[in-house]
Length: 297
Ligand code: C5P
Image 1: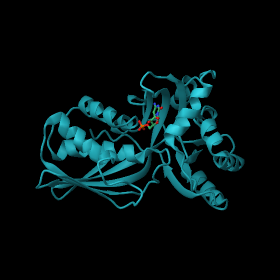
Image 2: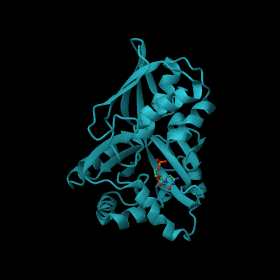
Image 3: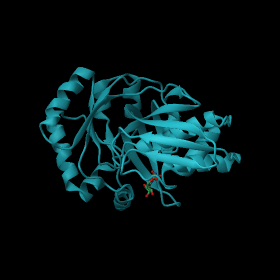
Image 4: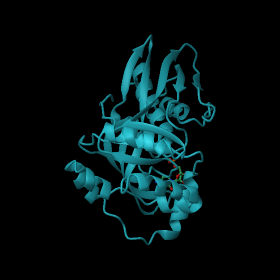
């Protein structure tokens, strides 16, 4: 994550992600699903400013009306869990500017929480190692651990077991955020009826990524959550068909939706595709690229 000093505090740009691959390997005893997913950090970032606070409170404000500012916010939960772990009692003031779409399956809130963990560890001088931050991240949600690593990662378990892959993915993305969302838990509930599917092999994508083989990567894009999300919301399936007509074989839903993305080999291709997609009026469009792991832990 890009981090800059700002007075006594910090400004952190937290990226978002898309899933290049997402398979469900089974239902777990804790009610979650066992995942195998390849996540890619993308350069569509929110800005989190963290300042020390003279009182013992955690203050949090977000400029987006759809984001809760109370203790349910993942940023506030990250701060509270860190204080619980370390016994630290000093407060902090955190202010979040959202540039990424909210609630679209691209992990904005999880990235914000990871930024809070990294930033508070620094400004509170906690000296926590990466493994400690990962422990706290896993308590708060399933995608936060990924954002402690960024780049491209193979994630398993609930999504919280993260294995970084070598940086190899210089691609661009056009994202479409439809005017409706999809409830993550509802999408996962649908999948439990169809767990007998043949399990897709992630190794084909891993090999394609290793070889930086754009057409092989496109050929192995996969998201098991697409079909349950499309059955809950048929308009989403229609959006995918329209994007497929423009860019065959390289469109996928991210996470549990509703954001769809098209993978592009370079910025020129992404630029012309963005124009063509804009004509279709499918929702908000974002053009972005892979974000590297800058190793700021
Ligand atoms: O962990 P997170 O808050 O992102 O998950 C949101 C919801 O998605 C969970 O409450 C659960 O219903 C579903 N989920 C799941 N299996 C996972 C991750 C999420 O069933 N591995």
